[in-house]
Amino acid sequence: MFSKKDKDKKNTEEKIDATSPKEDEGIKSKEKIEKTKSKEEENLEGWKRCQADFDNYRKRQDERMKELGNIVREDMALQILPVVDNFQMSLDHVPGDQGKSPWVQGILHIQRQLETILRDSGIAEIETKEGDVFNPEIHEAVENHQEGEKEGEHRVKKIISKGYRMGDKVMRAAKVIVE
Image 1 (cartoon, rainbow, N blue to C red):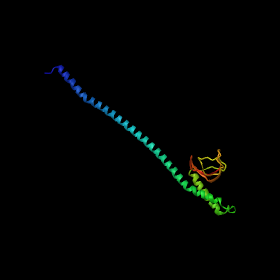
Image 2 (image 1 turned 90 degrees about the vertical axis):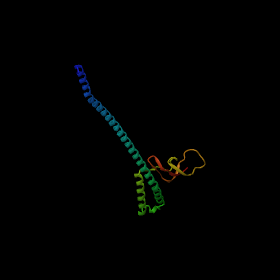
Image 3 (image 1 turned 45 degrees about the vertical axis):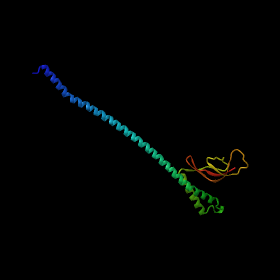
Image 4 (image 1 turned 120 degrees about the vertical axis):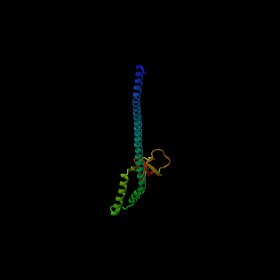
């Protein structure tokens, strides 16, 4: 029947066949682990990108909200400024003997309240005095009382209405008469 050589050969083949599926399972497990780790790293990177995108989105939205707030404040101020101007003009025409009357003091109080609202909203008056050098960035010349066309510095002769700015932005230039 079978010789000893044939039996040894058969036993060796059986051993190879017996260990072969286990080795295959080990290789397959290692491949699965590698694939899982690769997928895990890919998912982690995707999550990090998504998190960074969301942080950038939030920063852009915060900036937009800040810009919108500035637009709303500027619009509100542009509506209030003519009222402040009218209060100032009415106070300029109060007869001297009525300056201390309660009615005039009430108007002064309302004017100060409006100015406080503007100041608290980040709106500041552009400081302009008679005799200042005319600056077209912050002044608007409504009249020119200059004799001839002489060159040189123009000066503010009279302030018609105050100018205002919000931060570095001029909202309304001071209206002035220059000489």
